[in-house]
Image 1 (cartoon, protein in one colour):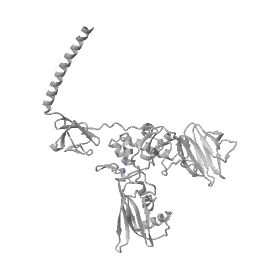
Image 2 (cartoon, helix red, strand yellow):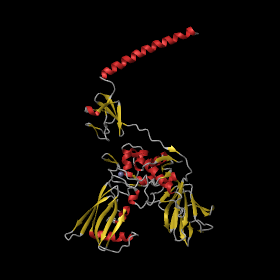
Image 3 (cartoon, helix red, strand yellow):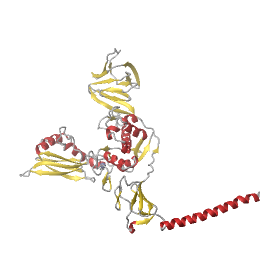
Amino acid sequence: MKKHGWGPIRKNKAYLFVALVILITKMFVFNSCRGGRGFVVPNVLPEKTNQLNGADLDDTTLGKPAELNLSADRIRNQSSSEKNGFIASLIQPQKVLISEKKISPPSVLFRPRAVQRTVRVGIIPLQNSVKMFSLKGIKIFEALGESTRFCGLIEGEVVFKAKEKKIEVVTNLELKQNLFLHKLLIISELPVNVEQHSYRGEFEIQCQSNTEALTVINILPVEDYLKGVVPYEIGKLDSSVYDALKVQAVAARTYTLSKIGQNLERGFDVWATVEDQVYSGIKGEYPLCNRAIDETRGQVILYQDQYIQAYYFSTCGGNTTRIEEVWNKPAQPYLVGVKDESGSDVYCGSSKYFQWTEAWGRATLDLILNKTLADEEEINFRSDEIVDFNIVERGQSGRVKILEIVTRHGSYQIFGDRVRWVLRRSDLQNSILRSSYFDLEKKKNNSGQLDTLIVHGRGFGHGVGLCQVGAIGMARRGYHYIEILQHYYKKVGIVRVY
Ligand SMILES: [Zn+2]
């Protein structure tokens, strides 16, 4: 046994020796060809997609070798270097290969919790009558406390009317009863048309006891609801900025879940308008948005295990703001101002509202401000002549914190975002001012009176939380949706709760 065993071992030793000789020879030849050990790579990489010592870095350079012309003090020995999403690897002396950094996607924790996944959306507010129709007919139930009573299946159009604080059902079909004291539940196998729009899910029709009007509530799974929200809130974007859709999906889901059950007296969780989130049912659904919603299913933004107040808006104009600078609301550690840029590259710089100008002639100013100042509930305003405007205080973000409006008989101070509701635009609808991030230019006439007011502004929206055009810009620059969310909401975690 022993003799037999020695043979193969001696053979292995011989192989090992030959391999060692080859390895040492290879190392010697390799090093002498290179003229020294190790690769030489720039210590300093580009700040972003700009320059590497004369070599322009753009999409065409990525993945292609670029010549280097580096001074000795900027060179140190290492095989590769990475910075700001780029990796430079030396492939020959004075030749570097720039490639995009391979980011391993940030992971999402799965911490299941008891979450109510059905949302109640107020789609028709206080209307005297509502039309409904579904291809397979609608089933009407009367809600009696915890139980329901079937009232009939109706094919064709049904009109619900508010009548003497009851709900009247008008159809071409004979019903045993057509006047109901309690709220009605509407169910159909197919989507239901309510007025102009088509919706998934079930419906509740309430008659407000103090008004002669109906409210229609659409009840559906949160994930289905989001499909009618995301395309309206951020737009039907293409696949080059796909992660921006995921960002919007997670933000909108967080907003929705944080609102569920907060308005029990009202009977529903969110309005289908800008008051909460714009929702228009099936009509606006968009396949790429649906995919982003499905791929982030159940993911929300948490701060210390609580849903954050996931505010978002169109364009910040360079930086977002702390919540307490624009609204009379408590500070939140995750809603602080962030610079929306990398170096001199502003993420929302492509927005058409990045910079804007608004001007008012003297007569228009008097007309608008006399109305808006009177509408502001806290201001006891009497019709007056506008004399001057002053920015008394700005917040850290640069937004106007206090605007003083001087009239002939007194002056008024307007706080934060309310400035936009007071200094409305001179368009037909007198829309609110695009943002509170602006400078004033005052033109006076020969007698020194205010003649024209010009506002040079930046951004669109309140400026709290997520900048949507910035999120699109970051997605275009290759950022992952979790990185984007954590850029705008600080100290938060992205967690899948179902
Ligand atoms: Zn921005």
